[in-house]
Amino acid sequence: MKEEIEYGFWFWSHKLKGILYMLAQLSNYNLEETEMESIKEALTGTNDELDLWAKKCFVGRQYHLDLQLAYDAEQKSEMIHIKLKTESGLKQKLEVLDLFQGMFKTLEMENETKQYNNKDE
Image (tube, rainbow, N blue to C red):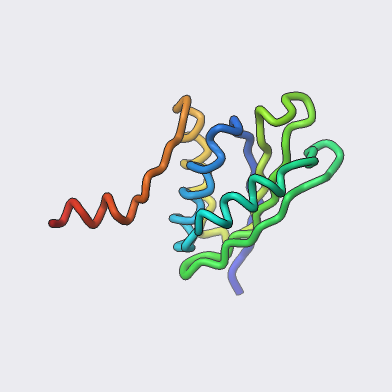
């Protein structure tokens, strides 16, 4: 049986799309735009200190990620707290993602697959 870990961090709300797409990449999960919109909608009324969380699972081909997201009680909709539960093999990559996202003002993700595939042509 694989060991599970819990990992969490905060990020500015305008990075939500980039963070979720990076998590999808790490777990090898195909995140659809409609899911992205439903996650944004589910964040309405969340509050980390009141333990009101939006929940989502990424059942990827490589990793299963249980996500909980909530707006920060003090920063309101400006900042999001995310808690992740997954296999321990993903811990180091989550730590790097956390550090990486903190270094950039914005994280905008285009269709990574298209861009990657076009480089090979």
